[in-house]
Image 1: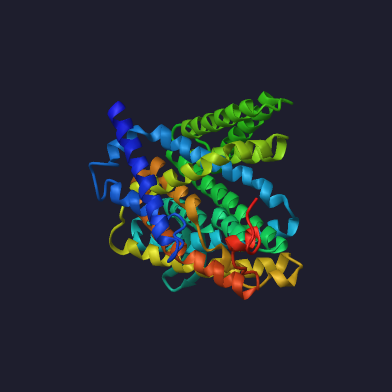
Image 2: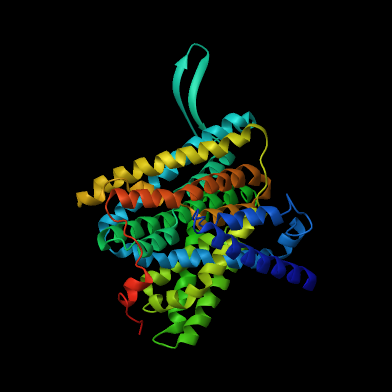
Length: 432
C-alpha cells in the first residue's frame, strides 16, 4: 500500500508541475480551463501508460477518489449561496439548465438504444404507442440502461463552469448586474447537474438491487437526499454558536468525509450526497460563509485531481458509439445557447441582459469531469460510452469557451482591458 501511495502522490505532483508549465505557455495563446490536466490523466492512465495510473492503483485509492469527489460536491452545494442573489437569475438558470439536460438526455438515450438494439429486450421504464400502420407499431420506448446513460450524459451537459465565470468577471471587470446573472446561472447549472446525476445513480442502484431490497428509484432518491440533508444538519448541531476557525475547518472536513462514506455505503455517488449536505449547510448554518472560506484553499487541488482522474478513468468506446462525442458536443452547444436565451428572455426583466448569454456558459470544467469519474467508479461496465461522450465533448467545449466568453462580453460592451501596473500605482508614481 505504501508503494501505491508513493506512486500516486508522485504522479499527482508531476501533474501539478506539468499543468502549471502548460498554463504559462498557454496563457498568451489559449485559455485551457483545465483540459491540460485531463490530457495528462489520459497520458498517465491505463489506456496509454499501464505502469502508472493503472486499474489496480486506481482501485486501491478508491476511498481517496470518493473523498475528492465529496469535496467538489460539497463546494458545489455551498455554491447555493451565490444563486440566492435574486429570483429572476435563479429561475433563468434552472430553466436553461433543465432544457439542456432534457434535450441532451433525450437524444443520447435514443442514440444509445439505436446503437444497441439489445436494449429493446429489456422491460421498458416507459413505453407509449404513437402510431399504428398495418402490422407496424411506432412507440416511445425507453429502456432502463439507455435512460441512465442518457441522463448521466445529459447531467454533465447541463453543467457550466462557475470558476471560469468568476475568473472572467474579475479579469474583465464585468458590471454588477451581468455578473450576478452569470454567477447565478452557472451556480444553478452545477447544482441541477449533480442533482440529475444523483437521480440517475439512484435509478441504476434501484435496478441493481431490485431482487434484494425492492426499492424504487424514488425511494432510493429520497434515502440519498435524506442522508445528505441529515449529514449537513449534523454540522450545524456540532458547531452550535461556536465561532472558532479551527473548529469550523475540522467540522468541514469531517462532514465531507462522513458524507462521502455515506454515498459509498449506499452505492451511489459521494458527489451527490455531499452536494445535498453542502446545500443543507448553505441554507441552515450561520457558519456557511466561514465554512466556504475555510474550504476555499482546497478548491484548486481538488479541481486538478478530479480532472486528472477523469483522464485516467477514461475508457475508449468502440464502433458507432463514437457518434456520441460529436452528438454531445454539437447538441450541447446549440441547447445551451437556445435555452439560455429563452430562459433569460422569459424570467429576466432587464432587457439589456438578454443577448447571447448562452455563449458565456459553454465551459464545463471540473464538474462534468467529476460526473464522469463518479460514473466510472460505480459502474465500470457502462463506462466507455459515458466517459468518451462527456470528456470528448468537454474538451471541445472548454478549448473554445474562453474565446466565446470574450466575444460575448465584447458584444454587450462589458469587455474592459486589465489595468496596467502603471495605472494601478498612478502614472509615474510608486506603489504604496
